[in-house]
Image (cartoon, rainbow, N blue to C red; front, side, top):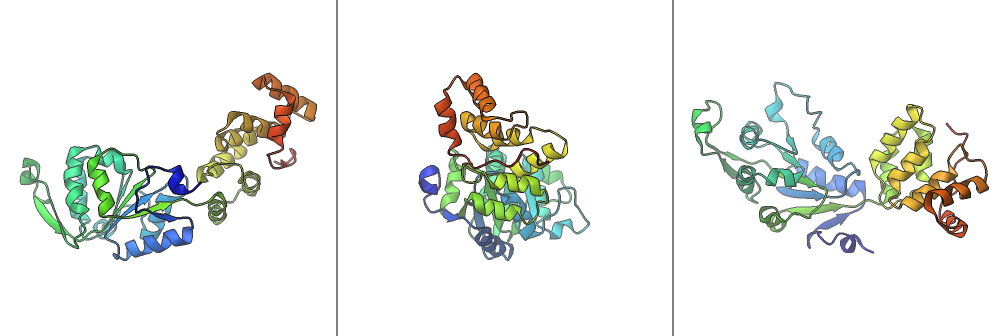
Length: 291
């Protein structure tokens, strides 16, 4: 099944990208100002936002300096419309990144701001024609900007016609890396080798691996939870029965297959043959004496 078949809401002209190296190609072009309007879609947990921040050299939200206006503007989730207008003025001609698109477009005043900002013309005019700007001494009622815009969203299921209109304007990237590709990317920064190797064994049966699985697993292990493997398998495997059988294989309290089968039957009411049928699809577990 293709990505387009799995995600029926994917825009028709979306470019499917599966490699981090290819994603960086588009992000670098955006950072250089060569792409005026870009829409980045993709499931959570693949590092979309982190890669955007890295490419545009956007630090933490608290990392503000006197030269803040000379840096890209990053807006995440909810934003007050006039506050957004002020930020667009202060960061005019700088790249603008709007994360969690649907929340912004749920506000009518934000829509009025973003529609002209997302025009394909090189120079855009943005206005806020209310008493607020009339009384403000440092913010004009209208201004021109050459900011290019990157919009980030996990899903494309919105019914908002203003968001839908962006399909005709934006270069749309649907980032859909394989589990193996995510795993290779995680290897560049993740330091918990026990967790890394444990998750590696289950990549082929996990529908969609998330970078957050690695982080959560490591925190649980470092906190001393002996059953961290079972917990992580529940996170990674949406099918409850499959995650249960996988978890039984790494449960340090169960030493024999007879004990695991007994626990399976008690938990599910299913049969012994069902247990073995599911187990055959699983990778061989690590030895339970690993920390």
